[in-house]
Length: 529
Ligand code: DGJ
Image (cartoon, rainbow, N blue to C red):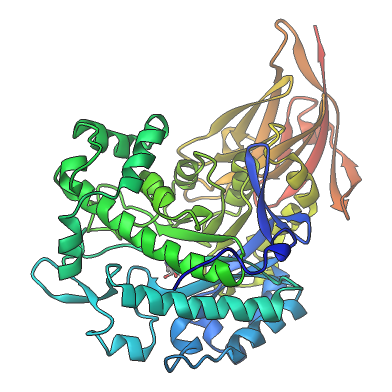
């Protein structure tokens, strides 16, 4: 397939696209920034419109505005060259009916490493569509990225899907953006050992990658810089000559080839309909080595390789199932990478979302298998997303401008110090206060965000925290609460509720957002001697 410049350049500016606001990257839809309070469907739910029928109202009950939904290669192209988009159209129509946006997940060549979603005519023809192989020569159910035939068949199906979306949704833009493939990664060994892969491994590292390394040496991830610098910063050579011998080099090699393949698929799709496109990563269990985890995916330590090989992929995103949410998200907030959480364990606290939006300027947050949440109308998403929905205009205005912060507290981190404008905020886990109610069991995760709307005026939202204040700029002054009120935003306008004083602010000592509920308080500070 030969790509020329996009055939629809005049549309590009009005289509959903990414835009920088200060340090943030925002998703712009119909010329307005959009925050995705999302959820991802379980893998098989979107294969049956009947199964989905009762799910839609549940999603609304949790205040979602966006659903992440797979489109399966095996279902849209059951016979080669014969496409069927009836299911896709049906689901998008339902999403519209429920006023939900859609992010399409392209389950093409790879889904959690494996090629389980490729159509039967691909699965059963291994001569034409070759597989990755282990060192001992066994085939695995993974299409090798070293086959043009594999890549072209995927790109053709994906481009046909994108063309269909342009025709059916180009005006309304219910579909906001696309995830290309799902959790790409090599297992059970770090390196593909099919004949084409072996041959490729013995060849020179592409000049394109070397040029990227030279240009960006100072900003490369530590792992990649170390590998390249330790092996002598060569400007040419085989993979082992340039990066040294070992699993780390095997992984760099595979990342380059996975990224090149995925870039080709994305480019084919964007040629038909240039929506923003990203890839997601399965993260690494502690102490696992390449091959033990899905290796070579868009992982933090391989970010540069993916960026060098895949310019048509707009950003890399983490699927966070491990408890150290903040640490993993932080690893993706580098080098201008746009922040989006396409998957997170739905049992983790929704205060993660406050943190992701407030601290890392995320475009969205999406718990996985969102339709499995029990009692949606009484769930944490119903309450937490309701508060975030109210705050959305304010969050979007402040993202990337240095006037917003997020915090996340649990047993590992019970205090956070945040400087914003003239003040330092000390945020403590509610359980550090002897008077706070608490239940038995592990320390819950609490958190929230702070938005500065004036020199002395702040909105603080979230759950389970106590906040105290100090001047950041003046010594020997005491910071007090001039006034504090709880309230809600109605269509972007603050509507004050109770004046929070007396026991509610511990007689002027702190702001308290009780655990188990989600709220917003507006506070004005002052200083005295
Ligand atoms: C991560 C994958 O991306 C999802 O499709 C799903 O398989 C979940 N893991 C299951 O936990």
